[in-house]
Each structure stands twice: as C-alpha cells, then as structure tokens.
Amino acid sequence: MTKVVKFIGKDIIKENAKLAERLRRLYDETGVRVLEFLGGPGSGKTTLIERLMERLTRDYKPEEIAYIGGDVATTLDTERIARYGVRHVQINTGGTCHLEVPHVEAAIKALGGPEALRQLRVMVIENVGNIICPFNFPLGAHARIMVAGVPEGEDKFIKHPLSTRVSDIIVINKIDLAPYVGVNLDKMIQDAKKINPRAPVFLVSAKTGEGVDKLYDYLRANIIEARQPAPAPQ
Ligand SMILES: Nc1nc2c(ncn2[C@@H]2O[C@H](COP(=O)(O)OP(=O)(O)O)[C@@H](O)[C@H]2O)c(=O)[nH]1
Ligand SMILES: [Mg+2]
Image (cartoon, rainbow, N blue to C red; front, side, top):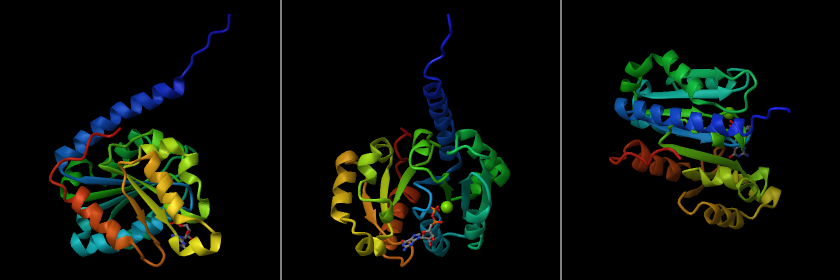
C-alpha cells in the first residue's frame, strides 16, 4: 500500500512557530524592538518603510536602526533603505515565497549577531511580497504590520481572513489612488475590523506622506518605546 505522509506543511509551520519564540527571546534579551511588514508585491511596503526611516532617523541614531529585506532575488529594496544610513542586510530566498526563522537568524549573524542587536533600538523586517505564505511563518516580531494597497481591491481583507487575523496592525496604503480605482475605504476599514477587531487600522499614502505621522507615532509609542513587552507571537 502507498504510504502517505500528510500535513507536512503544518509541521513546518509548527516548527517555525517554535523557533519564532526563540527569536522573540533573543530580541527581548538584547532590547531591540522588531517591526515586520507583510503584504502583496507592490502594496507599498518599501515605500512606507522609506517614509518611516525618514522619521526614525530623526528620533534615533542610524546605527540604532536596522533593516532586513526579504526578496526572492535582487537587492533593490535594501539599496533604497541603505540611503538612510541605517544598518541593512538583504536576504534572497532563491524562490521561497516567504521568510522563515533561519533566514532571519542568518541575517542577524550578518549584522553582527546578538552583540549588534544590543546596539539597536529598532529592527525592520520586510517580508517577501506575498499576501498568503509569510503570514503563516511568524518571525518573532513585536508587531506584524499588514500593508494592503488600495488598487489591489476592496475585498483584500475578506479574501485573506487568516492573513488579516494574525496581523497586529493593518495599513491601507495608496489612499491617494482611491478616487481613481473606485474603492470604498469605509468598507475596507469595516471588513478589516470585523475580521480582526484587535488590530488598529491606518489609512496612509506612502507616496504623499498622508497618514504616515499618525502611524509612526503609534508605532513609536506602542511598540518601539513600549514599556510592556508585546504579547508573544501568534
Ligand atoms: N500612488 C501611490 N503609489 C505608491 C504608494 N506607495 C507605493 N507606491 C508605488 O507602488 C509601487 C510599489 O511600491 P513598493 O514600495 O516597491 O512596494 P513593495 O513591493 O510592497 O515593497 C512603486 O511604484 C511605488 O512608488 C502610494 O501610497 N501611492
Ligand atoms: Mg519591497
């Protein structure tokens, strides 16, 4: 009889979740606060991180800030962020559609290991552009920030309830394009809140900068400078 090994994907997800707890302990021991950005390709993750880097480098020294860019190929995003003078490292997954804990561990090693983390106040991880897989593989971050671009469609949150549910913060980006693509922003907000009542929703345009201050102030007060550690990754 043919032997079948089932649920292998689930085992990988479980194993990664365990490793993510180890990463979280490393972050908490070294004192770095970690923000992870997730969302579809082109949703505006790198552009939003650029806007946040402008603000972070006003409040912190560049050597207190690090960026880990996850992508299938190229160093394009990391080159964009490197312009802010912050520590940076690119991970090329070579085809895998999401980052896993060993990718981040390798990137931390490239940054200088736990000693380097001790010098940091904040580390930003940009996951591979994909609205499904990365959400299944937590990386121990203190906040997982889902970025959905308005042109991707009004129904993004309903169509991706699991991704929406595991996110700590939801960002609706490219609001400058809402009138052109005929998207009802109120409906998007309502959908997001219905699926994930615990995540605050921010409306931004990473291009014009609208709404970015509000998001930054929230991140700074509640994640980067929070006295209480954030809840363990889910
Ligand atoms: N109109 C508009 N374009 C944006 C906005 N944010 C990003 N973009 C554009 O969307 C494209 C993809 O952005 P990028 O940040 O590279 O997306 P990523 O793949 O999620 O990192 C680029 O051409 C950006 O200039 C926005 O708020 N409004
Ligand atoms: Mg990007």
